Length: 196
Image (cartoon, rainbow, N blue to C red; front, side):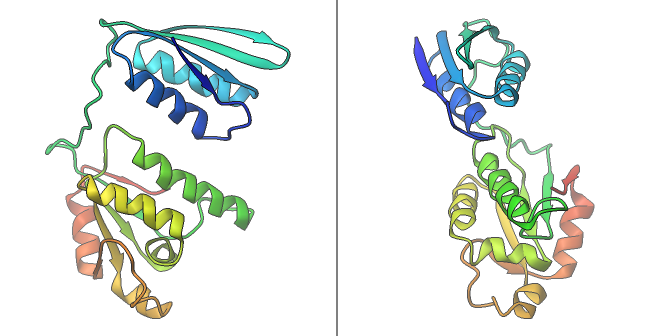
């Protein structure tokens, strides 16, 4: 049995910690302790989607989720998928995710990019334009995560005109600089385009 203490952790860390613990075993039990209801529900949903049986109990405002992984589980493979048929492209046009509070938007975008590094299925490319180019240049946490994605075969492309506009042309730290023609071409050829 593996115990995962996700108390105090915020999204997406509890699910990622759970996923990593389950990857360590071919069969057995992982018990996750978590102290917030949303994370509890996210872990339960993850376990259900992966085809694992689970049960949850609560003690003193802490949830304990026991996940059982067996050989027959529908997703027992730990392999990374990036099939040639799937041409998913992620387009990032800002250094923030969503509308509203700027600090929250920055936190969400960092969390989004970090979570990509933990995914089994990877996009073919991530395109950065407008203020999105800040993520490939001046934000150390995202540059580190993007380098990890690049090492796994994800193409990282930043708009050259945008980098010039924000005076970042010499600061792009991951991937390569591209142009609008290539940005449009990548999206036109994509089987799926995701815009966080």
